[in-house]
Amino acid sequence: MVSLSLCMIVKNEEDVLERCLESVRDLVDEIIIVDTGSNDRTKEIAAYYADRVYDFTWIDDFSAARNFAFSKGTKDFLMWLDADDVILREEAERFRSFKETLKPDTDVVMMPYAVSFDGAGRSTFTYYRERIVRNHAGYYFQGRVHEAVTPSGNIVYSDIQVEHHKVKASDSGRNLRIYEEMERAGETFDSRALYYYGRELLYHRKYKKAADVLEKFLNRVDGWIENRIDAARKLAVCYYGMGDEGEAIGWLFRTFEYDVPRGEACCDLGRHFMDRGKYDQAAFWYKEALHAKKAAASGAFIEEDCYGFLPAISLCVCYDRMGQREEAEKYNELAGTYKPESPYYLENKKYFAREPGRRG
Image (cartoon, rainbow, N blue to C red; front, side):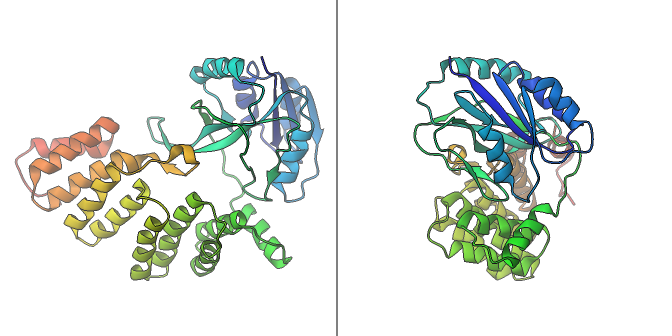
């Protein structure tokens, strides 16, 4: 059986680090912790679990810190986690079995990363990440922010999920500050950095600058297709924010240039028309979302609700507003198959149980 080093970077993670390490301590053969400047109990907790704890001076470069951690791993394969990640107990045995059968000639293992959840604990936002790489095979993180290892070679996909559960807010401006410092210093932005810089600007509602950066990204020929699709969606948000609805919807349709329609873009279009009282057009796009391509294995950001609950509950509203009660009730029941505890679904059931009437 192959051996596995868990290599982590941490800073002031006393609230979550024990939870993370308890979830994986029996799944890995070595734990390497690199601390980038904690002033709480993080290093004390790390010392209890880790084989070795190192200090690394933070230089506003996540890749530099992660690559330092990788350099200390001594086992056949290297795995990374953030301190607020966890592998649930029900997934742990599957992980153990997977590790037992992992072939030594594997280069990269891709695993789903769940980073957002609904009230029932179901994942609402997932994407595949390069989680495990073969040691001493030239795999390194790249990018000062939103760092990643480029998958190549013999890539294996696993459906064992890593979950990301924050318990406190992080520094929301840190990533944007790093990108802005890079820009002021005249550093070269590759396509991936441009894409994420545009996203960070958008999160801070700097719509014009975000649009400029995202369009610059899309004008490059080397952008990853999934990032291009998402960038077009983000450009729509920018133009909505600037009050230009025509340009916004144009960018939503531009997403179709890169691949067949995705559920997220179809729901965006459905919302556009529903908000303007054009329920027939909205219904068309919500139906498309129900049957859209879900490109999970590609690494795309997947908004799970866009492939089930959201279009179904929205179709209920659209058909109710168009006076088609039977269709509306049918789609409400469909929504209930995805989220039976949803207050929207339950309130609609009460509504349909009453005398026919128009919902306000």
